[in-house]
Image (spheres, rainbow, N blue to C red):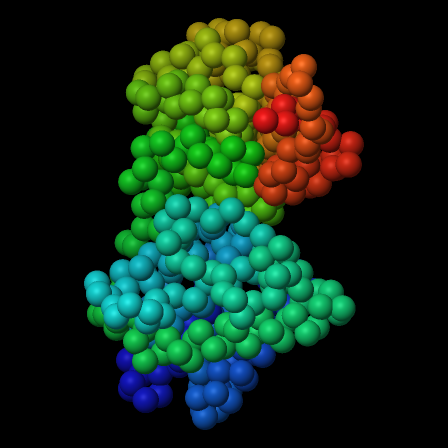
Length: 419
């Protein structure tokens, strides 16, 4: 463990997906470098001594380096780059859980928290972090509107970037003396994600978020750890997180238990896109088959189902016994006349699984968005005394519409009473 005087001033937690491509990586590392320089200047320390940032591929690795564990346990300030990918990453959730464990039970009023959120990209933050303020009067208006990453990418907003950078540096310096409490080195392998813990504490979390997130059900004995294609060594939970992050969505798991049918109907009522992944080795067996039979009797616009098969199963074709069992005794209705976004027998590789998952999520979100806009229009009424024309204003719906290619200016107007 580093001596106190040599310990970095702040730890940067970020999603590796936000630095996947060269241009994205350049902005992430430039911000970290600029921030380190600002903080070092204010604290009178060398630039290379104030910041800890892990640039390894820990998200796809199998072991946590002891250096990372030590840093998460001792560095007084945590800087978290908020983005859809950040809240979709289990590893970022583990890091954030470590920060939460180190918060002091009591702190004088007005003292900074020790966790410094940076709105890297626009995102709807999950309930577990909503009590942590990420805005400040020192930040320019554009910071909340588009996020720091977008500010950096637009040269015309250079002054706004400097203002936001200075604001983050000031918060770090002012919080340094009363930051996070050092604790014994963490066992990060056994540490749950803060996002998972938050969802587990809220029995209604699957009903929250609407088209701003996706729920996933893993119909497999291995659950999150199931590897549909073992030769690729990618777990289904990690794949779901990756795709959610790529689509700028939060993600959550729904247990495949006795309440599955009820929860699926609740996600429909709340318009939350939900993907069911079926493991061919599991989906026709015991309680898993019974839960899928219950699902077979439901007709839910927000749900899609994908079953990834092996190449050996493709070779067997319609003589594959598992496929026959699924078709004839488990999901008889939905396999006979497949609803939209149900891929029962079309996926035979990891690439097809990833591609169809993205397509299904985007298609479900578009249908739900159209439903929302249509409902808003039909609910608008005019009175004999007079009316005013209003447009439904919802930042997340507007952003989602733009992502789906829906022109905002063509969205339905709402006519409603003036009083």
